[in-house]
Length: 110
Image (cartoon, rainbow, N blue to C red):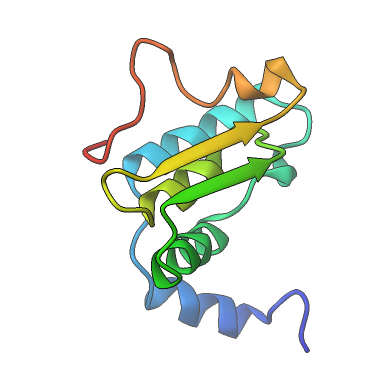
């Protein structure tokens, strides 16, 4: 098993995957600028994989323990049906506040 994947494999995956949406790009930029450990955030490819897992197993509810800034929670939510629910738990109010502004919650359109 290769870890981390080679640059060739990473390039192939990126070239054949859905591009990252504006919502995820904004969250990544905010995480990098406002946290001390941005490397803890799930990346774009991992997020696509989480979405695929949620969709392929027909999940309707997800419980996430350890939210950080919410990238993985949003990725998992994108794999759920319209009436799906994600519940997240984290003890760090500072990083979870980065998730998204209260006056502009994420929707399937952003």
